[in-house]
Amino acid sequence: MTDDLVKRLREVKDWWREPGRTAEQAADRIEKLSRLFDITVNLNSDLTEKIRQQKDRIEKLEATLREIASGKYSNVVFTTYPPQDPAVVKARLALGEKKDD
Image (cartoon, rainbow, N blue to C red; front, top):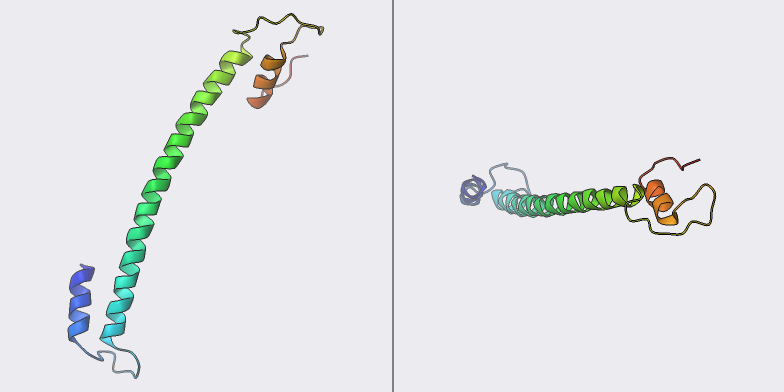
C-alpha cells in the first residue's frame, strides 16, 4: 500500500503547490515512516518473546523457592528456637511470605 502511494507521489511534482514542499519530499517521508514502523514491529516482537521467556523463568524460580520454603530439602541441625532453616526463611521472604513466629 505505501509502495503504491510513494510511487504515485514521486510521479506528481509539487502537488501541494507550496514552495519547498514536493511530492518527492512526501514520498521520502512515507518511506522513512514505513521503515520506522517495520523496525518498531520487529522490536516489539523481539521484546514480547523476551518478556515471555522471563515470565517462564520467574515461574520456575518461584516454584523452586516454594519447594525450598516447604522445608522439603531441610537437613540442617537447627541452632535457633524455634528451629528455623535459614534457606527456608530466605525463600519464604523472597516469596513475600510472612516470617514464622
